[in-house]
Image (cartoon, rainbow, N blue to C red; front, side):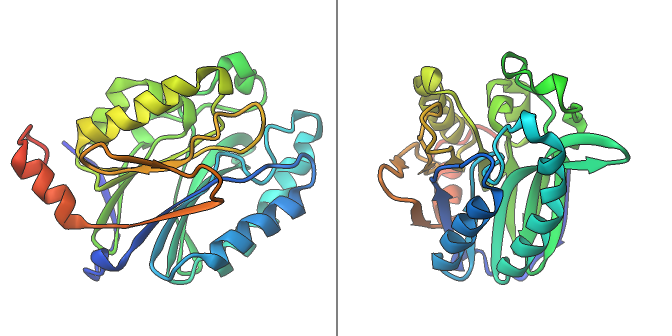
Length: 254
């Protein structure tokens, strides 16, 4: 049984544009990264669903981890202000009940309307040494303005049982910090996810040299557009395209 959090439903879904971001994260210049993100958000259309890279404000700056955690308060307030008539999705390091997590947060109309901790930490990158792991049970579909949004954080993309949890999503957002050595895996998995779940997939990866740089948007038919040299790639969202695909090739997704 699917688990959907309904934030609001004003049936404005067809007004939205999808936006994948691609930019460098400079460590430890957190404020510069924040201003870059805010500048890109400001250039997007109203009624945009914006996906930014995983930890795009700080990176995995373990040497300065106390400062990384403190910066979350500054970032939260700044992104709240930028989220009027927009939906903004990315991750940041933050604390909850004394534990440190990599939280994906969904900002909309001046509020954080949803957050959850990354449930599958990338142990090759030592994430488990610095952060606590969230639960798969917290992976839910969030419905905003009639649009069902699922989210997978980077390494979570590799787990097929998590795809099934999100199979009725209209959009699956994937904020990532994906290694360049496994670029083809990222391309194949993101496009396969769109085809399998017959939905839009909006990916955002860092422009850093160690990352795949393969931000992009894939349609329910599996047609992919990658950012290339565009810091912000926009595609018009269409609920009809999802419905047509699911009726044309009926595999049981509603």
